[in-house]
Length: 277
Image 1 (tube, rainbow, N blue to C red):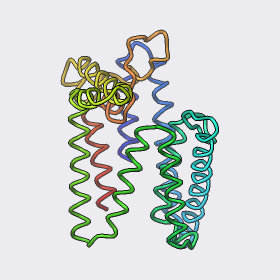
Image 2: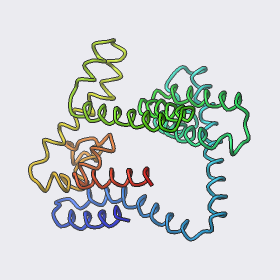
Image 3: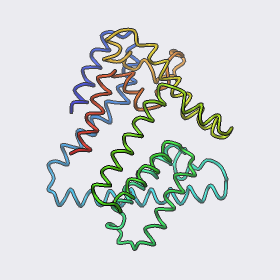
């Protein structure tokens, strides 16, 4: 709800100060619709009885798991036949990687309960999921699969050891993200290791770090830092009328550009609240 209120305030504020309302309305299309849908869905589900809500969530989880597993099989099969980045049943490797990863996450924690699987079948299906993610070659999904697999593996440990491991892993990932987002040290390490890793690191690390530096060069005042450099200023690089727009190819610079540090802290606070709750 706070995101929705903040978004409405940002829209009115940026309409008043912008020279191109078209960019602002384009950004509204990206943000306002999904936030409004999420809020509406939340209040709708709150009115339901617990048993009905549980039944709906189970049915939804089964549907996602089945659809994701079908895409994982398609990903493995297409790689065996075509030997290229796998699209599975979707429009591209990014979409395929995201769907398979989301389905894999649900399967790890709910699969045995929903489908009454033995350990061998559970392990075999999990392996197909992991192969499906890997063969999309979508690096973000691959890192996500590694993290969620490690996280699930911690359930084999004692509770205190598991909490410590998860805390250390989360802290290391946070430090890695911050350090690699503002400097090129990780890109230099990988590029010096092999040519293949250099090519992967160029698109995954170097360009995103470069765009982050460009974004900070646009910040010229406290207002830019707190509220963003302008709603819809960046991320519209497909428009020929704005060739200097910076691609917002990560959640961090997307929020920082449009909502500033205020939006970044609100987003992190919301995530921490949901995780700790």
